[in-house]
Image (cartoon, rainbow, N blue to C red):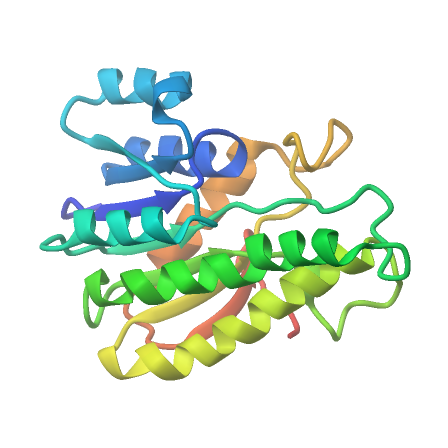
Length: 233
């Protein structure tokens, strides 16, 4: 990249989020990464030591309003070229709307849909006008058009809710000239994706960062996969 850029990566302790941090650092970005428990984030701390002055670690549990407020205050005065709101939960093992309790549904929907939107809305004012990117890690499983089976119906519903809410957020932020991205990372070999998933963390993270870089300045809301293809809403 020609000029140093500053990114905020939410949920960067492991998996895709950690992979994105590594990829951005390799491309010359400066990064602020969040983890629920920074003191226990050994890989992030090692990256910070290996890239002095390029990686800052902040505490954040997206479901904690007080921690959202604290992070928003910490970002005051900073101009973010990219924000990736990453993270979520798989939900109950049965993944059935008929079997789920109100508590299970509430936790899944709040963690995967409501909390990311609240956080993005709080941070939107710190995203650079004209060329900044605000992005969510979502899933093609949240596509209503592509949802041809009932597999993991609750997880699908939570990601569909995130996609719908992000569409509403676009109406709030588009006047600032930012780009809003809803990103499908692929089926990735993480703790959530499992060992048989076909996409490596490195491949997914590289694609996600490439999409963030490619879409800078386009001033639209796009649903894209990590390889650059449009995903049907």
